[in-house]
View 1: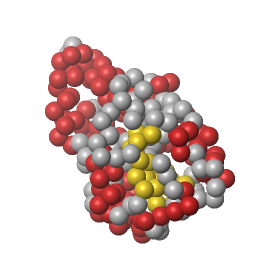
View 2: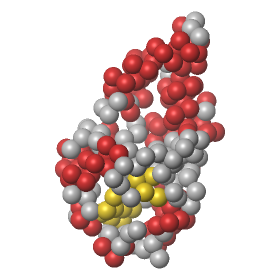
View 3: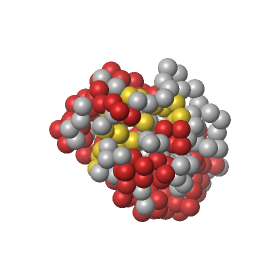
Length: 217
């Protein structure tokens, strides 16, 4: 699936790629509506109906990923609410094996995430994955999400890379398309970002079921 001889840099997404997206889906679709319903005296279903259009309005923007934005918008302490269900944070199978082999191969391993710093800190504290990376890049420091064409040019200013010799593994099709348009040469999607849901349609991209399939030898 991959020609490792032509890959120098590996960009890895976090949520849905290295980590099970079940935590995030449960948090935004179940837990936040639960707490919002309690705050406003609504049923759980009514809260879900109220929140859905507010979510949809900002999907793909920095606000969508911003803990502070949602804290202001909803009047809920989003960072604290994430801690209430942090037991659901889980690493996908064979991720640590892959990351250890990647470090051993002496290629540059970079976590590139849209997640807000507060979410990132919680998940790294819970999973202890941060020690495997040469760098951790947060889109909130770049100023635009990975879906945005300008992201990759801005990324070059803080993490120089040769697009043709770079691998990106990401569960987001808009992100993969943005990276492809920029010229990143090696792209992989993820079949099951959320282990509690069926495999997703990965469209025109090659995809992995787990990281055991692409461990560099």
